[in-house]
Image 1 (cartoon, rainbow, N blue to C red):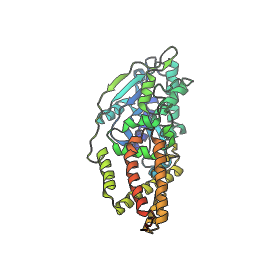
Image 2 (image 1 turned 120 degrees about the horizontal axis):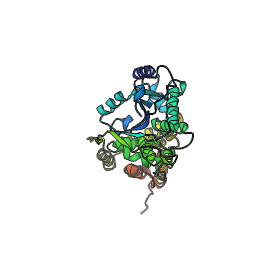
Image 3 (image 1 turned 60 degrees about the vertical axis):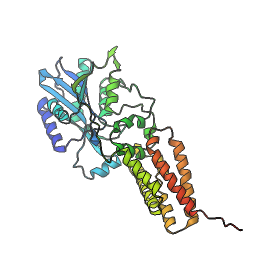
Image 4 (image 1 turned 90 degrees about the vertical axis):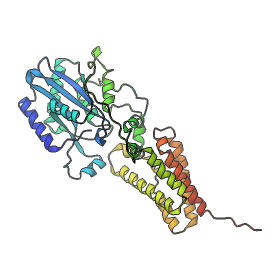
Length: 378
């Protein structure tokens, strides 16, 4: 969830090697502290959800390092295509703690620390595991929005160190991933709308996995280990209030204004443009769903609203084929009804409802314009 330029990554690796003297088995002192860092939210896309890292501090060995599983290389060939496809390689890097804190202080993002209350041998094992991962091919992993990210990787390596599924999700396991994500987009309306319509059935599953930093923070506070809490009381290292941005365009009002214009314009050309936009978005969703390895984008039932078949409807309308234009309009009205019933209990129902209503008006108008008139005999 946090991008790091490759050159900075190489420098950090070199810096780590200078700290540990090219040894993966540097013994930590009895005063060593291992902790989980949770970083606050911000308004850049990569920072909407916060960040998770692991800190290892040992003053006796002059060590104070932060291990970060959220790095990727912008210079990767076909970067955007790889990210969209879901085979972009993320990797773990290390920073001096002071540099890490300077960056978050500069970005005005809070940082919280939870020290792991684990035996000395477990601290050593975690430190060794981190360094082994860092200096091997295991430092790379294929990023997955829910299943593999900076938070889930921290959970995995701590659980591996403790020889069990010690850290599990506490709370919010009875609501969906989609519902969990929704509040994180406050102040970013079109991001919320975009993720609502591009995500498929996977995000409608119950959110039983820890995949967000503050889910981990909250779960750690409630996790026992060997008859005592796994972590100490949460310490606040930096504290900033997240500023919710305001925008003249990125808000619900411009969304409603555009849709209201489509409804009230009552114009054939406006209707065609609206349906064309929906159809092109539907084609994009279908292509991405098949192309991408991101399971969140697969099985996207939102194509019932953004139907690629609307392109055929537009084509038939241009050809003035009234019979089949009418039939396709009725077909899409049925799609719309089915879609509405399917998502009525889902988190994104209200945000897409204005679009459902607009599509209903447009499709009914198209159907009326092309319905075969019954001759009246006097």
